[in-house]
Length: 345
Image (tube, rainbow, N blue to C red; front, side, top):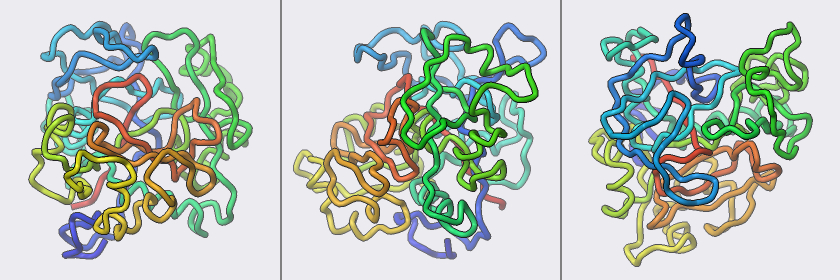
């Protein structure tokens, strides 16, 4: 990321030695009733009160901290720790704004109190850097795939995934757990099977040990700050905060061909295909639903679904992977979460 590099290609406004990525995807802070670990309001207000549920119908939002009935409800600050329910049911616009606030120590109830950092929602260029590094000598050091986090809360209306777990195999089927409490509050020194520090759990790390990044394969799909610029529709409706961000270093904007947009047409745009480093264009061969490197699932953005999500979910099996990417309209979903990136200023 050299100084003066092109914003539109994932660049920064100055040369940086690297960036910090959250070790685990965003999670809900403790039980709401637990006063010793109480989740606190952030200054970010939900921009939507509806979500897309498992039956693909809109409904009033019911989520981990209670019922959301109006847009004045504030988003709780997340945590980035293992063994937490993945923070889902947050649209890309709110996830983007929340990640920007993480670096503002004066923001309401900010639990992080970070200084001299630039915080933002992870971009595709940053996701790609971590994905490629996981296959280098600085990562796993071989071609071994990262195993999926396949833990899913059985019977929960609000929780879909749990952070910091790894399956026994790369493409293991969803492991539906009946006792969520056991997985978010492991009471023994060993913890449930696949917990992040176990030999099985470490296979779900980008380095193959506890030093790496977790939940980049499975868990919840994760928002990335990228979209195809169609200038209206869902870009404006669900991505207003991201779209209105004037500073291009915080987002990746893909060229739209203006014809109403199909996946293939957008993918074949010369301006898009020249982009390198995002682990999107280099790892797939068409823009339609298919599989790329390691048989990871991909489906590129289009007019109705202009935003990108990465990594796969806990139920994606062989389709999950660090090279997996998908499209979304941008609204709240039970299966999409997020994580931030920090750059030292």
